[in-house]
Structures are given as structure tokens and as C-alpha cells.
Amino acid sequence: MKRRVVTIHQPEHLPWLGFFAKMDAADLFVSLDNVPFRKAYFQNRNRILGPRGEPLWVTVPVNMAGYREGEIRAIPVADHGNWRRKYLRTIEQRYGRHPHFEAVFEPLSRIIEADWEWIADLNHALIEELQRRLGIDTPIVRASELDVHGRKGDLLASICEAVGADVYLSGPFGREYLDPKVFEAVGVEIMIHDYEHPAYPQAGIEGGTFVSHLSVIDLLFNCPAAESLEFVRSGRRLVSAAEAGLQTVGRP
Image (cartoon, rainbow, N blue to C red; front, side, top):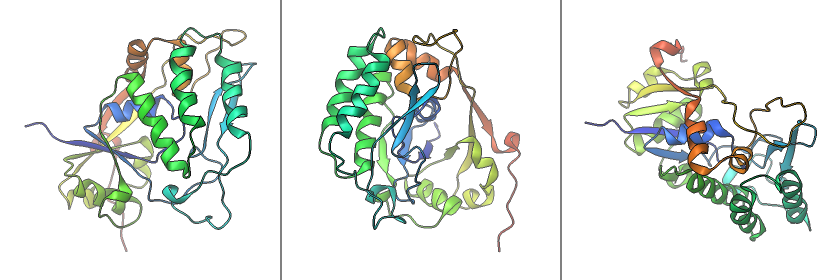
């Protein structure tokens, strides 16, 4: 009988390849939208390729006034006039001559130009479009819609129990804080998703040095969708809890 693999991740903005590789390896993706928003992180911004081969940030302004301890789902998009035009213009300037620009930019621009109240809803719409473009059919549920509780590893275990997971697929930083016994108590095995970023044909850089860890849109502007998915999958390595060296964490 096939085991149900579940992965959990915050709804980042225009996520990188590793995000989608983890989603693709799972039977269910849970969007962790019920944890505190992290300022100056990846929840309202991400990196594209700059004109000299440097990473260049594209950012959606958010309103933190009165929301400093707010959950990701409760952080509003700030109405800063023409931010959408500047955001899309930056992407167009960097990728307008790339081989797959029109196919990727048109749906992306429709989403950005819509009237979004919450950053999480905007991010989910972008994630679903990028997932569709890549050909990944893993269903998504939001943690805020589940009856779950706890913090950190306890919250993740509660989510796994709520959605009937047999395996929790963690990112590599799970090595630092996950306690296997917390998951064993709800009948869930931990696996670690390690990711070695692949190099792909990348136009628009001087000197030919590949720039990694950008938003997945950099890949999609450069490569056909089916080929992009193969690149996404190529960096993936799944490691058992024992192989990853996970040990029971001392609990008070």
C-alpha cells in the first residue's frame, strides 16, 4: 500500500526550484500560513537575475503597521500606488528577450495586477500558476483551514496527523529541530528533502557564470515547461531520518 507523503512549507513569493521539487515529491502540500510573518524574508519578495549577473529583488509592499506579530495569512498588501507597474517592469526589463517570456509573463502579470488584500492569497495564486506551468499536480491545503495546534515541530506533527500523513517530507533544516519521537507518536515517519541546485541554460548574464537560488521564474523564462520540471526534479535527494542523523531532542 502506498504511503501518503506530506510536505509543509510557508507560502513564499515566487519560490525557488527547491520549493517546487519538494512539492512534486509529495502527495499533499500544506501551506503553512498560520505562523508569524518574517519581515525581509521570502514571504513578500524573491530574487531574479540582475543586469550584471547579480541577484535582484522584486518585492510586494506589505503593511506591517499593527500586524508586526501577525500570521502570514493576516498580512495585508500595502496600497503603494504604482508598485505593480514597477514590479512587472523590472521583470520585463530582465526577461523580455528570453525564449519563453510571453508564455510565463502574461499569466504572471494578470495575477500581480489583480486587487489582492492579503499577501498569502497573492502568493498562493502565484504558486498555483507556477505549479500548473511546471506540470506538478500535488494538491494544496492551507494549515489555517485545519484544526491544528502547537509550535514548530509539534505544529508540523499536528498537521501531519490532521491530514493523514504516513511520511513527513521536511526541508534540510529539519535536521536542526525536528524530534522523531513527536512524529512517531502520531504514526508519522520523517524524511529529509535535500536539494543540490542544478545548472540550466541561463540567458542574460555576462561571463557565462550560472547564478543559482533565484525564483523559479528564471528557469521558466529560459526553458520549456517540461524541460523545466526535469531540472527541478534533478536536484532532489530524499534522506531517511536515520541517514540524516536525526536524534530525539531533549524535551522539558
